Amino acid sequence: RMFGVIDMGHPYIKEIYKGGDYLIGGEVELLDRIKYNDGLDKWRKTTRELMDEFREKGADTVYAFQTRNPTHAGHAYLMRSAGENLKKEGYKNPVLWLSPLGGWTKEDDVPLDVRVKQHEEVLNSGLEHPGGLDPAKTVMAIWPAPMVYAGPTEVQFHAKSRRSAGASYFVVGRDPAGMKGSELAVAHPDDDLYDGDHGRYVLQNSPGIGSMKMLSFVKVMYDITDNVMKVPDESRMDDFISISGSKMRLLARNGAVPCSRTDIPTDLVGANCVPSGFMVPKGWDIVVDYYKNIDSGRWIPW
Image 1: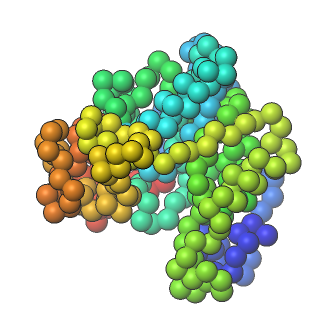
Image 2 (image 1 turned 180 degrees about the vertical axis):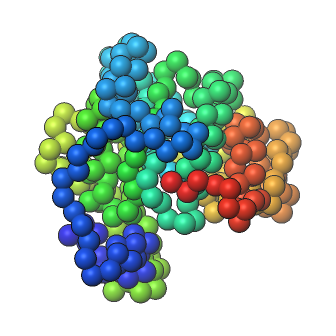
């Protein structure tokens, strides 16, 4: 019922079956605050602490953006645009909740400590870089849930759980919490397990969603004329390049350096450079350090 698929190669289904024939479940009583002493505890905030911080920033509404990836300028554009759209609806001070997932993730996802340190640089950069975020209008807090890659079922939890800490809006993209089936999948092996639009459709019609509303992603690309990621202009598509997650990982693994601001090559991998507006520089350095030392064992996976 949770996954809606039969796929013994699915990363979290494999984790469930690692538990053997029996699993324990039930009500959990918290006796004291959990601390990991991993340098990230200051970002693990209670719902009360989050609500207090939203009030301190003068928020008249809160919109949550869940992430399990380093934040590049495309993400930053989407988050800033969502805030501007909320202002057009009449809000005076919408506050962004940057909400990195802090629980288990599959082994090829970027570890939590790398992501959080990269997010810190995104906030430190402010609005001086197109990949930055305004710290005066942003609250970052780890959400301590695992990523189970259960598509439309899981995204309901992602959205509804943020309501408990004060979010009125949830930013959602295409195929949220989705992934491709493994070669062992009964249906859709090596193809998307879930229809890309089902997550958003289910959220909009989900019982219990209450007054929470969804803010949908749009596709953004890198504009080489001004070094900014934005919604592409269909009248000049030759000016836009797409930088996929797989390409970003390859560039980081190769230690790519910034491209010339005025002469961005079409083959970024061949030139081994990354456009200067793609990610805040210190954030990119953190991502490069991780991928170049991925097997060092010094990372905190979750």
